[in-house]
Amino acid sequence: MLQKEGLRRDAARPTEVIGPLGEALTTEDLPSPKTSRWVIRRKAQVVAAVNGGLLTIREACERYDLTLEELASWQRSVEREGMSGLRATRVQHYRQAHEEQGRRG
Image 1 (cartoon, rainbow, N blue to C red):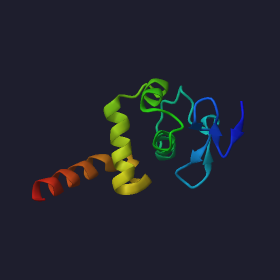
Image 2: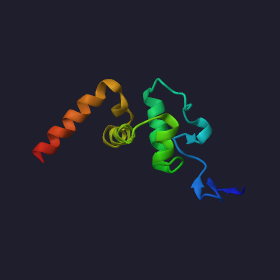
Image 3: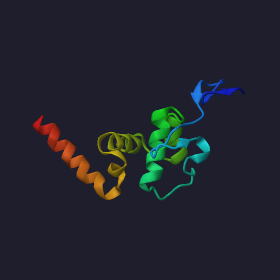
Image 4: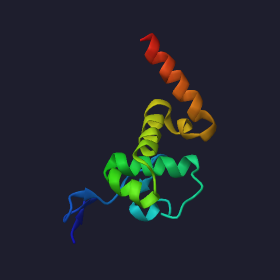
């Protein structure tokens, strides 16, 4: 298998993407599929892997036993608030603020 410029020739999928802290992120760097404690960094790594094409949405959901809604909420949180939006204690606050903004707009 030829690797050039971060792409696997067989699947035309990146072998690495930029992680949440600007580091190179490969599948080997991702959280373990057995992860049960989802800290901000691990969630952000999964989001970066999906957004960068390292994993498909389906692969991420299957690998980490996530629902589509859960993964989508992580993606929205990162998009809106950055990594801090992934804090479990802040998720409800950000959802409420977004809903209020939608009602006003």
